[in-house]
Length: 180
Image: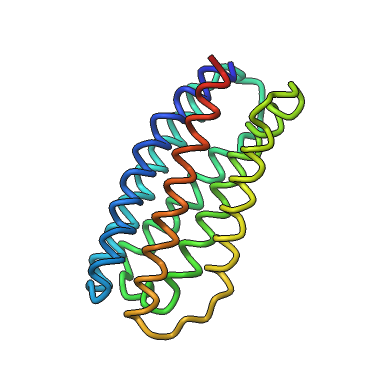
């Protein structure tokens, strides 16, 4: 059960991380990008997350389990994506908060795998905890940082997104290799 879940989430994590890395690099080098384009790009990434969350929820092997965080994460992502499609200018005021909340929610799904690794006394647990801690710190800095200028905000946001995505790729590989 867990092996299939980790394998399935590995590929979606890889796709999302690659897309967000590209997005982060683009923000880093094109800080004057239009807000509408940024909103639509984030909404498209969130729709990928929604699709995967729904797929993961309905194809899970433990059908008796009533609570699954993936469906809640997917529903929150869907609401945010629909909101960004309907009102893309909202992101001008709240881009940092929206992205940091998404990052923090995403860490909850990583927490489950880390706890399983911890219980099995896996040798990579310290690396995973360290990476998750850095990802959480980045998310919280992004949430509470009050950068006001769009140019600087986009460059900082791009840097944070790239670093976060690279850490997510590393963490996904650790989980994937651990479960084999």
